[in-house]
Image 1: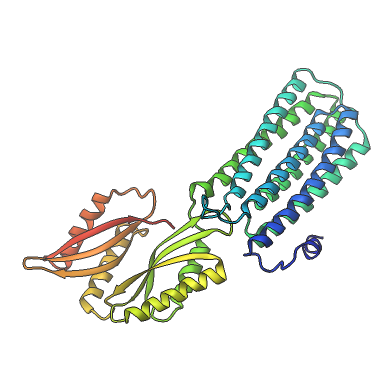
Image 2 (image 1 turned 135 degrees about the vertical axis):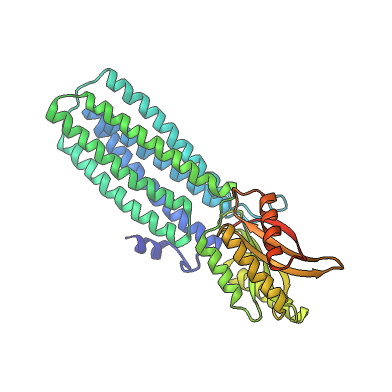
Length: 389
């Protein structure tokens, strides 16, 4: 069914890097989910009201909140597809993240309201009528939500959308929630203890709140500037290393301004004897490749490396080994040797991960001591940098 709907409504469906195609996927997901969630709400709320089950009615209202969340997501996809303007030259892609944040807040608000109603039901329990129609409605709801989970997860993977992956997780959670509600109706009928209904309603509310809090964290992460995906970083590095003359890369930084609007900077290493014009031509090819194939605006920086200098290579290897001995997360690059009258400066950059526990001063002292093991005349000139990947 999912692939049928994609073939039916998405034109140029293979070109997922295109903002308009991505928006079309988002619109399809939003429209289908709004329809499904509204029908589920209608069925559950009617059955819950007729049977007097606060748990079923609460689960129905949860579906309505899901529908309103889908509307917000739909608006987010629409706004994020707007082209850059003078005030927002990086585009409007982060609207999708903001829409996700609003969805999370809606989920949490509904959870609080349902929790309050369920507490009242515990304080003042009322008889819950049992009806096989109710069971059928809940079972159908679980089947629909399970399909929605696979539907959103499939589209989320196709367009690499964290918003849709979160929506898929929410649908999966709803299957669990509805199963709990169904269990409460059987327990109430079997035991005659109707307070169970209120307790189950509280459980549903708590589950919604916890899920909402988790989704807030997932949504805020890209807005705050999370580390790029490890596979994406590896892909960039391996792709650049495949260009002629490239020895290595370092200092990669990726800036995410929303889906379809990413920027990156990276230092590209070439042998020092490489013709500057030739090196810049290769760098132009790298930037053009990522722009055309990845829709990634890449800015490269040229770094000449003395690849044939035996002394520099020996120092570089020694420093790399010393870095690993201090901590495997450390790395060194841009090693240079500058001779002087009384000593020899060893100039290099040391890259540390964000939140590294060892202070910069300790790192400098460590390398200053180690380098003199190699040559007492060596003096370290170290630039300690933070990694952004």
